Image (cartoon, rainbow, N blue to C red; front, side):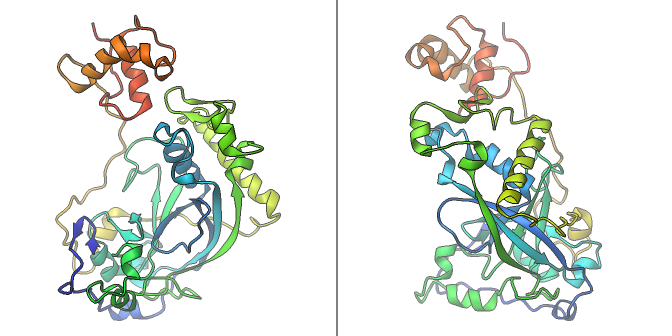
Length: 373
């Protein structure tokens, strides 16, 4: 059972909190009812979007580009065997304490296997504001990402029943699991008609899906396509092989084109479905949410949002891990596996090796700032 970064072993002694919501959280709010689409990248398994993170179309396309396609550690297949983008029509209404601080959305909590992992204390935030829907602009850097990205998008968090336990613990019926008790005592925010009370802040319904193969223009069997040597995207070269759809991760113009292509494909399969749908503003405010919370902010973690920063850079130096990896690459690696070092020869500079190895991921090398002598 976790509350942010603090976790307790699940045992018979564990006490699952049952929130004593204030009168303001027990009453219907004056908040506006927003109706909009959210998206989730998924494989063939389907499960309801509760205790998960979802995104607008820009957010899910950045997730696919940054974390799913072009993964050498997955044999250049899509990570998690993702095959499609699911769309949900969501309605949200903020609780009154959240509205009183000028927000329709709270902090965007991260969920891992159905468990809230922060930032900071999930319990305290829900005690103060109810089971709010959280939002996070990709461009703001809090809580993530803390580096510049080309995609203009938003991530959301949807708290469901027992959001502090992982999926498998919630349904564990053993005496010490507390899963069924947690589900009863922590109902989450899903309901039929969002009213803005503590436990009734959002609903959702299926609104279609699109295939990544169709979006990218892959016909036939995807695995055979990969086996033939083609690649959706390569993180070293920043482009695909036999495909250009994901070329240039950090190009804002191409990012917009990819998002537009995904929207056009949804419109092709579900004509007119975007009529009357407007994405709400992500109006989460760090100071108002934490510093002005009822009872104050009690967590001991940092209380200022992270600033967006450029990726750290540095030159490999004799004796450090990056320098050792480059030395091995120049003396052995490039001869044994030249495809790992595209565009390089054994005579290429240390900086050139460092740049390629940094781009491949999985090495100790940062982006080089200058040329080593």
